[in-house]
Amino acid sequence: GAVVSQHPSWVICKSGTSVKIECRSLDFQATTMFWYRQFPKQSLMLMATSNEGSKATYEQGVEKDKFLINHASLTLSTLTVTSAHPEDSSFYICSAKRVSYEQYFGPGTRLTVT
Amino acid sequence: QKEVEQDPGPLSVPEGAIVSLNCTYSNSAFQYFMWYRQYSRKGPELLMYTYSSGNKEDGRFTAQVDKSSKYISLFIRDSQPSDSATYLCAILQGAQKLVFGQGTRLTINP
Image 1 (cartoon, each protein chain N blue to C red):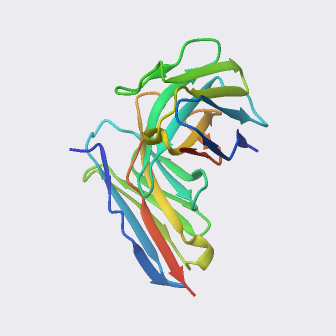
Image 2 (tube, chains in turn yellow, red; image 1 turned 135 degrees about the vertical axis):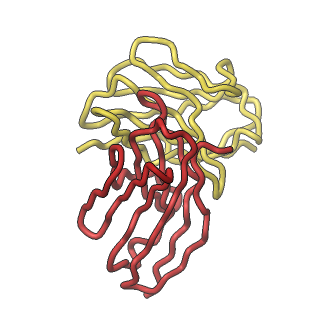
């Protein structure tokens, strides 16, 4: 139990285009999902907290107009990187809170902007 | 001062050895402490979490929290090559925000 999926697992896009990443909790309902970013050999940095049916809460320094988050249902949250640039290339990971304080992570999406 | 500090390693030990991974944290108010394992190019996997002080054991893994020194540890007994991964400690800040350490890259040599 507690499986979280992400799609796509790897995406390459051209600079200036937008990319959408999906995060799904497959076997549980998640009122709260989280989006993280991880650069090579570095730790996870929380970008935003997404609550079903309400606006996401962004961490300081994260541009909310660039990283659009939609938590449309109890099992789906999406992250759209708008007008992507090469510096947005990174590993994006979502997590979903099941019960209590446990967060379960998706497998991650590797974004490469050329 | 970072909220959570973790030696990034890398750490390399022979198969069967006992591994000790450690983190320190800055705020004595933190109560929940987690350990995640992350294989290369994968998402983190929750290994264990502990509340407040004390030990928690799960198979070959033991998590330990010493609140007096703000020190958390993960011990791996009878280490296996399949344990080779990056281990991340994390603390729960507030109700749901996880703050991660840098992660320690561990290699178990056959």
